[in-house]
Length: 134
Image (cartoon, rainbow, N blue to C red):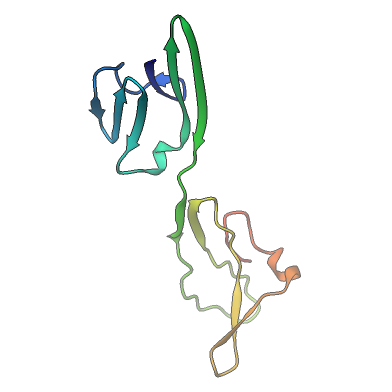
């Protein structure tokens, strides 16, 4: 069997067998009966469809699989302390990123023992799509 190479979102990522080449963070290792795509280090930009193609005696086959790189949530914008006068409108900003996109929920400190209570669902409706709270 002859491996015709790997494709990332339709574009060839490395040269054809029997050459083993490494480009950027992608390394392909092809042998007569096996082809392996190694991505190291894996980054969020590697999320794509990958296709391996093979042919033998003029017949060609391929298989496409999706790689989704999961990224832990992190802060793009953390809420900051705000002083405001009674009756003033206040917007608290909070923005998290990650894959899948994180869900932002708000809670409020209650009492002297430092417990946090989740804000009710009616209050959660005041959370904007970017995670800000009004």
